[in-house]
Length: 122
Image (cartoon, rainbow, N blue to C red; front, side, top):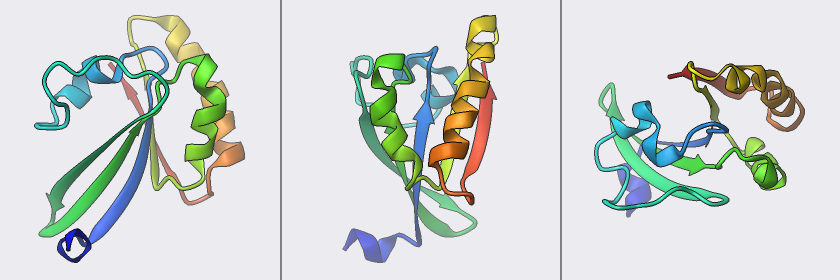
């Protein structure tokens, strides 16, 4: 059973309002995460990646939530069950940085108070 082989399951939505999940530089460094030729996300995409951390197998449930405004109502439902949230912005686009407070307000409103929030600029 897969559950027997994994020590921890980590639910991790990633919000990329100004990037395509499949071309975001940091995410592209995770080997085997995307099948070749996979296009941009519309709505929500889901991937699983099992990694080993300090001798324990951790299953990452990665939710690509395509941070566009039209999908906001969908993405809010992913906050509650998240163990961590990754917010991204484009360091070459000031507008992407300026929208972060709005995302942080949503996290404060919808996520549990134990959630870890990580900000990544590229």
